[in-house]
Image 1 (tube, rainbow, N blue to C red):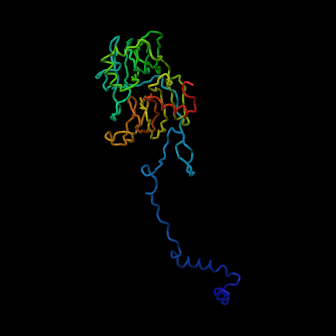
Image 2 (cartoon, rainbow, N blue to C red):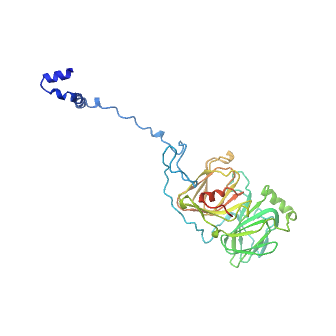
Image 3 (cartoon, rainbow, N blue to C red):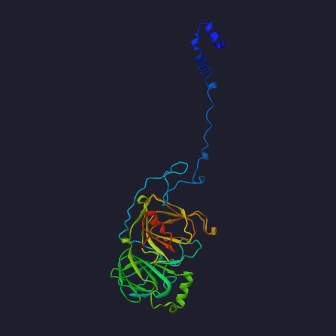
Length: 378
C-alpha cells in the first residue's frame, strides 16, 4: 500500500477508493498556495524584425500581367486584390500632345528633307531618348501638326521606314509612286517601307504621330547620310507594300480577368522593324520587373498616373542612382532600352491607356499567348 493511502485512511479522511485523485488534489493545492510558483514561464516575445518585408523578402507579393498560380508548392496562397476589369474601348480621339516633340509646316506644302525634323524644328530632338539613359534609341519619334489642307511630303528612302498614327482629324496618305490613297481618321495607322509618302490634312487640320526607323545600322548615322546623299536612296519600286489599318477595329486581346488589353496594328510580316499597338491596364494592375533582351519598349500615354521604375539592371550605373522612377503622364514619352529591367507602378487613380512600340518586334507575341488568341495574321 502506498504511504499516502495509509496515512489518509488511518486518519479517516478519505476512503481507499479515492486514492487516485490524490495527485490531482496535490496539484490543486500547489496552485492555490504557491500561486505563480507553479505557473509555467511566459513565452518569449516574437521578434517582429524577422518578418519578411519589401527589402528582406526573397519573394515579395505583387500583381503582374503574367498568369500566376493560386498557391505555391508549399501550399501558401498568394494574396492579391480582386481584379477590376476595365473597358477595352479606345478614346474617340487619340488626344496625345507631345509638346516638346511637335513639328509643323506652317505652309500649304512642305518637304521633309532628311526624313525627320532637323535640330531646332522640335524642342526636343526627334532622335533623342526619354529618359536619357545614355543609349541612343533605334527610332525617331515626333508629332506632326498639319494646318488646314496642308501637305507634307517625305522622300523615297531605301533602307528606311515610316510608321504613323492619326491622332486628330482626317489625313490622306498618298503613295509617292501613285496608286490608291487612304483617308485615315483618328486611330488610323500606316506603315510605309521605304517611306515615300505624302500626308495631306483636310480643311480642319490634323495631328499625326510619326516613327521613323532604319532597316539596319544607326538611325542617326543613316539620317545624316540621307541628308547628304538623298539621290543614293531613291527607289523606283517599293520593296514591300504600304499598309493601312484602323486600330479601333483590331481584335481586343484581353487577359488578367479583363484588367489588361492590347490591340496590334500590324503583323510582323507587315512591319518587320517595329511593332505598333495600344495597351490598356487597369488602375490596380502593376507589371512586375522584367526586361526585353533585344527590343526597346516605348510608351506614349494618353491616360496614365504612375511611374516606370528602372532597377538599374542592364544600364550603366553612371546614369543612376537606381532604382529610378520615371513619371508616366499624358504627353510624356518613356523609353526602356533593350535589356534594361523596368516595372510599371500605377498609383491606382486611373487606367493606363497608351500607344506602345517594340523595336524590333517580338515581346508583343506574349499578348496573344496571355489572351489565348491565335497569333496575329493567322
